[in-house]
Length: 115
Image 1 (cartoon, rainbow, N blue to C red):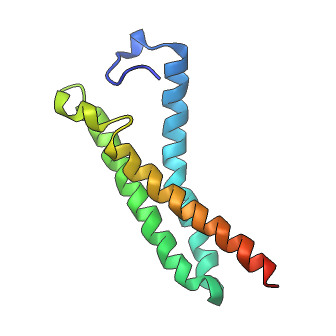
Image 2 (cartoon, rainbow, N blue to C red; image 1 turned 45 degrees about the vertical axis):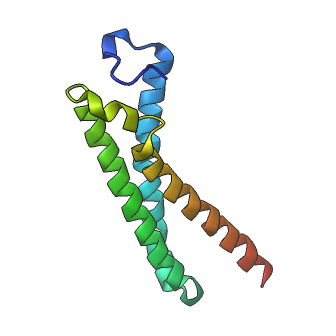
Image 3 (tube, rainbow, N blue to C red; image 1 turned 60 degrees about the vertical axis):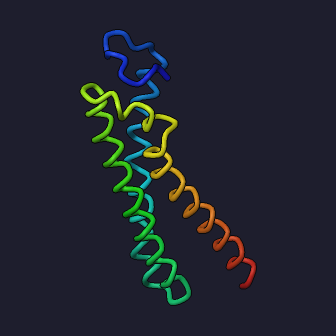
């Protein structure tokens, strides 16, 4: 990826592709949580996990929004630069989603074996 704050006309092809794919992935992360909520709430044994799914999706959505705002501000406020990219704002979006995804997959595997 190109350094944060690189003007669009100076971005590499890899940097442009990374930027587009990152935006798609960051938008789909909270959406993928919310897609499962109705089904989780219908099933009694998954109902409790439905609330954790809403919490994870909301946390990820707020972090993604914060990342988008911080990225827009980076051109005017150099103080945000250390917090972007490999920083804490991006991790606030990615880590809760990965934890939710891992727990969801683990629950699917363990509950499938109980049948």
